[in-house]
Image (cartoon, rainbow, N blue to C red; front, top):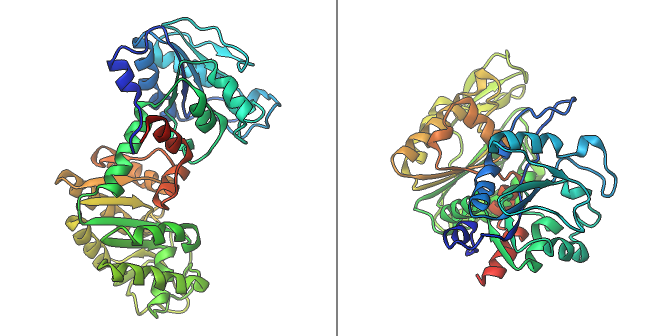
Length: 400
C-alpha cells in the first residue's frame, strides 16, 4: 500500500510556509458535563501536528465528534474541550475556528482547530463541492485518522482528490504498515484469532481470512456455532444454528489450502450467565442441556498456547471467553500471555477491536504486542478484505 507520507515531506523541508490541513480522529469520550474522560486519541494526534509545526507549516486540524446533525450546531458537538486538551499537550493555545469552510486565518508556525467537521452540510455524503472548497484551504492534506478510513466522507476522501498534495500522517502510516505486514507480507505460519458472540457479525472476516491464513482459531459464541457444525451438543450456549452451513464452508476453504481450524477440546460451562455462577470444566462433547459454554478449558488453552507459539504472524480480534468474569477469563488470559511471549520471541502480532483492547489493558500486555490498531470498524473492514476509501484515494494520489 504505497502512499505519500507527511514524514517524507518534513524530511525534504517541503512544509515551510505551507498551509497543512490535518484530518485527525479526536472523537473522544466525554461525561455529561462535557469533560474528556479518556484522551488517547488526542495524544495519538500530536506527532503529526508537531511534525507539521516544526516544519514551519500553518496548521489546521479537524475531526468529527459524536453524531451531530449537519448544519445544526449544539454546544455538546463542539471540539472546544478537545482544542483545550490539545493545547495542554502542545504547550500552546489552540484557537477553535467555527464556520471555517470559506476561509481560515492561520500563520506559519501556528495551529488552529477547525470545528466539528460533521457539522458541515455534505460531509457524510462526501459532497464534491464541499471537498473542493476544503481543498482550496490548503497546500497539503494529511489524513491521520485510521478510525475513519473505511468511510468515504468529505474530510477523509473527497478533499484528498483535490488538495495539491495528499499524504498520510504518522498514525495512519503506522496502521498501513502494520496491516500490510500482517496480511500482505506475513511471516508464516499466519494465525488469525477471531472471536465474538456471533458468527453473523464476523462471517465476511472468517471467509476472507480462510483464504489467507495457515491457522484460524475461533472463540466465544462463534466457536459454539463451529462446534455445532462438527456435530457437538452445546446445551443452551449462545450460537447461530442457521449459520452451521457457512461454518462448514469456512472449514472447507481452509482445508482446501492446507490450513487448520482447531476447535476447543474442553470448555468451561455454567448454568447461569453471571460472574458468580459455578464454573465446571467439561470435554467439548460432554456439555449438558442446561449448561452454557463461557470459556475454553485448560487443555484447550494449552493447545492454543502451542498454536500461538508456532506462528510467525498473529492477528488477534476478540476474547475466547467471557473474560469480564474471573471464573471464565482463564482462556483469554492464557491466550494474551502466549501472544505477548510469541511476540517477544520474534513473531509479529497485530491486535484490534474494542474487546481485544480491553483484554490487553486488563492483562497489562500493551507494550508486548507489535501493533495495536486504533481503527475499530476500519480494522474489521480491512480483515474482511474490503477496500478502505481513505487509504485507496491516497494510493491513487501517490500513483500506487
